[in-house]
Image 1 (tube, rainbow, N blue to C red):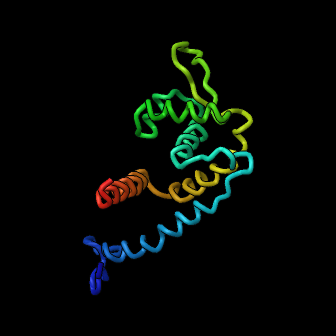
Image 2 (cartoon, rainbow, N blue to C red):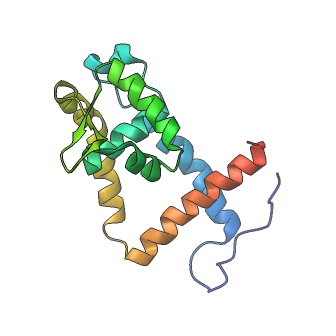
Image 3 (cartoon, rainbow, N blue to C red):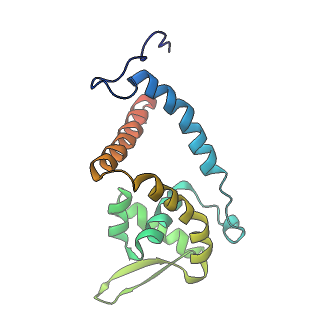
Length: 164
């Protein structure tokens, strides 16, 4: 993957790094970001639960947005409701989540973080949300949209490169 002699010029608008320079910067930055995230210690109360990355996304949604239905969670996580239902069932059996009737529609169930698990989950995940807030708050809505869109495009392209 030689890019020798490329990418030293500014982008097409004359401002900012060329594509190859931006790639170099991201190749240095991404492992540090992932490494830093992996070093966030799991609270003692949660260590025995064998939480996977898919659980962290679900817990982050509930922590950030509060209780919601399985269908709402599925929409936020961009997965099928059956996938969320399986995760909710698993985490409910472990005492991490609670399901209760929706007061406005008794046919629906609302999912929330169990009261005794809320503090350790918040202590664990809230700093990540706070860091994203600090990083994204100074940007304009269009810049935030572009940043999130770029990360989505990268994730999609990486999946294509890996054949996943």
